[in-house]
Image (cartoon, rainbow, N blue to C red; front, side, top):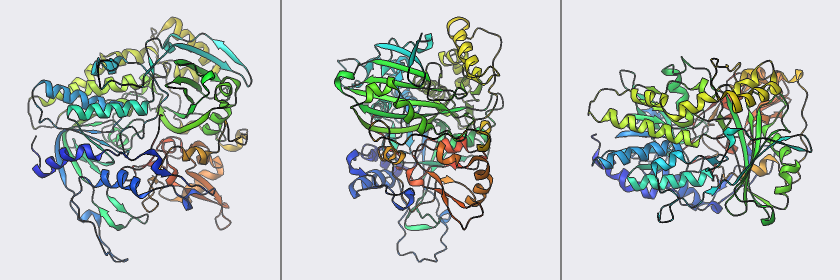
Length: 632
């Protein structure tokens, strides 16, 4: 694949230095009012330079604009974007994207084609910084990539895997924990508890070793198309645009990356993935996707309460009976515990707050007995795909493909998805390598990826459990869902001629506030439970105050008129980061003003999924911004 020599040299020379090495302690948070807009989080100069400047300036060839007048009518689109050509461009540096990149370069190196270019763009300031999961991983996929990933003789082994030692499953009432037999899908023998944040960083290092060009801090914001309609590649967003939409003197044009194959590995509900699904009608033979919101903390607990390798799952309290979800408690590392709650986003009551439910759950004796006396060291939240087999779209389209949770391969009953994300990335990589082997210049369609996916363990695994999650949406309700899921888990195992359907979208399931009981949440105690701003400060999140709001609502007043009367501030309650609020304002017709505190955003995507009128569009902010997760 031909490319501009100067850009190619720059890309290869820059790769090692682009990765941010800024220490976590370099950033501090300051929140002093109910409106965070006035007190945004800021990093010190060293951290900001490392995270933003080194990452996002490395490939720019646009001269900074200086001494621009206030009334300058300069149009950023008048500057042509620089471009680079690669063989494969991967959007997203999570387990799926990195696995695809590594497998491609392994194949290229094995075949003596070291000039085969694989470039990976990641919007986070460093690889792993936006990654959050439970996480208990099935090692089957990573063993295919690196058979010696845990071998003591391998100096590059992954050092932070805790073997699972026991499984416990409990049904919670307000004060009791009733033992239940763990379903076979929750058997974690041979699995490992990890920080997916750490694991992804490790994969990033392995990707660079085999020759992948890894660029954190580059936010792909636009899909590029050829004249024939196939995907040409992606473009990164412009930098130095003010909140008013006008270029600042620091303006730099984005850059285009053209590729024979573009793989989208953005994770759940990716902003570009939404576009290609719509353009190529990839859901024409599948159902809509459904989602859950996972809210998580990492604690350092007292040594006498630590039981390394223990895995606890719960269902029931504090969630209402008509709300699907469950909690977890994983003991890993050295006296560390991962504690979290997943709440299905098809919950009906708009007064419900997933964050508030999580705080309530921690006060249950099952959880409080472990956390009490410990210290919370990290917090985060992220939407995850729950639609399963019924919601898998077509994964290939002209010029590219969807991999990992961009397509939705989470096995909900297993509470796992990393192995499927990695495996689909590898399947797509092998299909791309085969399709590119003939050297044809025509647009490429990865037929082999669609075929190999259907023959893979991923397809078999998801088909077997396809009826469990939607069984909770039947007229039998939650109790019927539990009973049917037990029958599927222990007896039927998917060997039935029917496939249950998802009966509604997540946003469409929400009832009006006046028809639901109001939920009041206890005041945080500051020891086990915390207010939302304290939790946000533990995410390390950061956004420039003077940039366009990346949570796009066309008309804030129209949004208020449509949403407030029926849902009474739903956005404030579904957001786990305090981004949205309605502020009392007598000058407004309804007495409230809709406000977006974009600096708080931790990129969970819940707003884009749950907004009742689907009028909030989550778009990427400047590259390098967002959370900087630690041990999540």
